[in-house]
Image: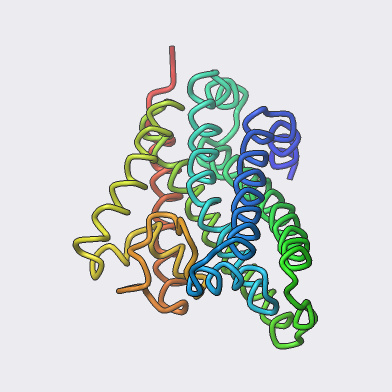
Length: 269
């Protein structure tokens, strides 16, 4: 717990934490503003109906979360890569090993702190998104009568658990890539490359790509969302139950790679 608390305190002060939160919150707000404007100004009936879905409760409870997860996936990967890469670039891992810390324990504890910080960012951003949806509905003249729908509210803990799992896996992926590369920039660049490569490949081979990390994470929340994080679209999407197992497999695999690579890596000098 001492090591975990130390890592958490360190992350609270890191600029990467504030940049990640501001980017995620800003993009979610931008989408909600665009949706509100489209619902008021669109001359196309289908576009107007589609935009109003994000402002109509109880459906907005899950749709806003799917937007946060879709955008947050890439940011979680970048954040995980930035933190893991800095351990090598700044020499903090070498210093920790020199004072007797277990390599794998130090690495996994650092990852745990990253995930907790990302979960906090996810929760606050979701609250901002819901407030924006309520404000947008009021501006667009959409009834808020479904906001206290009991079935939707009972479903929220399960949706949050799935979103938390998706963010944890994507952060672990970035963490593992940067650990293997031993570099922030290499880890971030490779992670972003995988993100976009998966999205492009999903157009041509959705039946295969649906098992890949970003597609599996986006399928955790059953509602499709714009910019759904490299997913292959709704065609060929995994069902949410299967997506949980696929996401867990990627998460465990990434953590194993991070721990083993750190144990075997040369960090002297």
